[in-house]
Amino acid sequence: MLIRFIIIAFLVLTTAACTSSPTPVADTLLMPQKPLLKTQHYQISYSTEHQSPKVKSVQLPAHKVKRNQTVSIIADNTSVTDTLYTQITDALNAIQLNVVSKGTSDYTLSIHQLELNFVEDTKYQIDTPESPLPTFEKVSLLHPSQQCATISADVSMRLTHRASGDVVWFGKSAIESASFHREPLIYSYSQEQIISNELEVASFIHQQNTEQARLLRATQKVVTPPYKTISKISSLTKVQGPCNRTEVSALTPMMQYYLSSILIDKIKVQ
Image 1 (cartoon, rainbow, N blue to C red):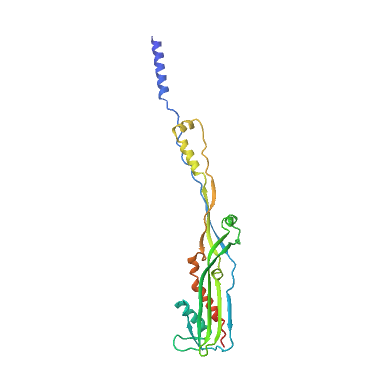
Image 2 (cartoon, helix red, strand yellow):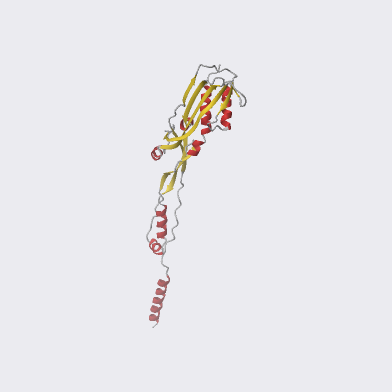
């Protein structure tokens, strides 16, 4: 009887021990530490061919223009700003002709044409850098050229002897904005490393942290996929040089002054 009791007690204790023993479960997986990502910054330039200003100047021998003679400026048919009027006055003074605004003068300088027109866009080609640039080949394929708005400026003038009405000199000059602004366009961009499989790694971690997966991982080892990185080149950002219509239009006052100065400098004063 005692032996039977001992056997029953042993069986009860064994069953209880088996029932209370915990099922092994693996720890929760954490996202792996991300690698240090590098970003490098670069600049690239674009240039175009430049043309000299077109200038035509003819001085007739009927009257000799002499130093300290007076000139009045007539610009009734053109939109001459106060700034340009002052600049033309300074240019005439520089060749020793005196500008008068009232009374009679020896000559009149008539400004017949002062035109600005948008023309066909100018293409700027990428410049090969003097020092090797690791990203140049890729950038030159992605962005081989830039198209920029272009303005053509035309100025024409005529110098007339007031007493006789004889034309003493006339001239015309023209230039396009791309040739006036001779500096290259400069753009900046960056090459940065990015993780290409972050979603894949996150999905793996999420799947491995389910209850069923943790039970399996208690007896079966898994390897978290490593992060993979790729290099990506950003879009270009212009940092120097006029290109769009607003930027190019801002050049026009200087272009008109430049062309006017060229013409006035052609007047031969004795």
